[in-house]
Image (cartoon, rainbow, N blue to C red; front, side, top):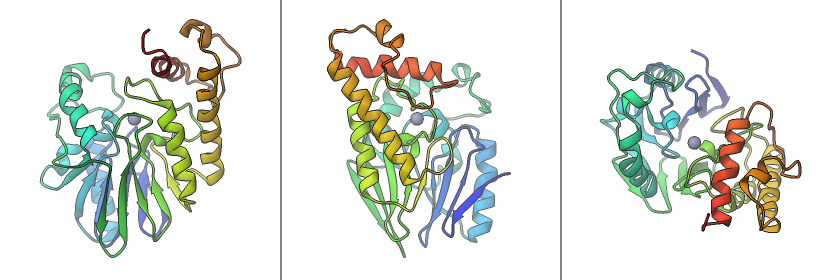
Length: 267
Ligand SMILES: [Zn+2]
């Protein structure tokens, strides 16, 4: 299988629909378990052999299926997420993530699938104190409970879906919040990272972070200044900010609709 090792202690792959990542801090953590668990199994074996150690825990950046369907491979280990991510998986995921509903997921292996919940949770942040510390920080934005990993010794961020690099950010989840997302981006920029692994797309440069931040800032400004506009009008308004829109119409529409609700809760 194909994977990339952009720094000594990080490996990632995009073969599982959502990017999956591993980081060696002295202990080996996997971040997100992708859509297809057969691919995830191969990724885990590969990574364990490169770093010559066994997985210590699985960290989940949020509740979307392309980041959690492989959880059951880690069920004997700590599976860690924000408290909110676990709550959403219990309330919503248990209704939605059923094999019969999920046939259209790319590469999804429905047969034998069990929804496996995080077994450790935290409220806002937690730190693993290994040879190198690893911070797990809940920022919200893409969805409620969305969390990033920060390795301060190597200035590495594993951003989950807080970063869609050079593709329209998917906000078509009813818990997506564009104001919190904008603020999450400025938090990431302030960390001044040297490596940023995104949830979808290639690793992001600081320039990419600023471009996404500018876009989200413009989106918030658009909603604030255009108070009396309908969703339909926004969808056809050429003034609505652009960010790598090509081929992302479904994502763009869904995001515009769900972000609209934050500014028009009565609609
Ligand atoms: Zn997501």
